Length: 115
Picture (cartoon, rainbow, N blue to C red):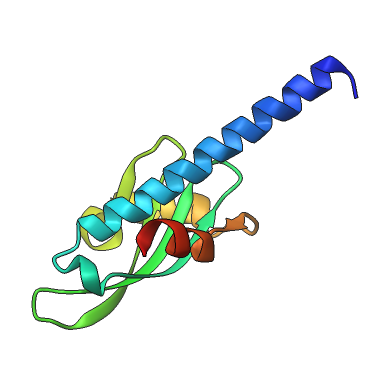
């Protein structure tokens, strides 16, 4: 492998590591933003190839019911929630989260960040 190829590989790894960090930070921000953070349960976190992160989770609402919801962190780092950001969320979700592929980070983030 040439020095240029090694540098490209190292740069790609650094970029991917930064995307993983951003996805994990998004999960932590979601949890901290809940009315009852102790009731937050991350059920799915997929990091897409463009750097977007797609979250499915369960959380307690104002009435004490635990409901499923979704969120997305766009490739530009904007956190959009299904119940708060309506149309912007739907567009971002459809653009990133409905495509095949990506890295499932659910177990990694649950074990290292959320617990």
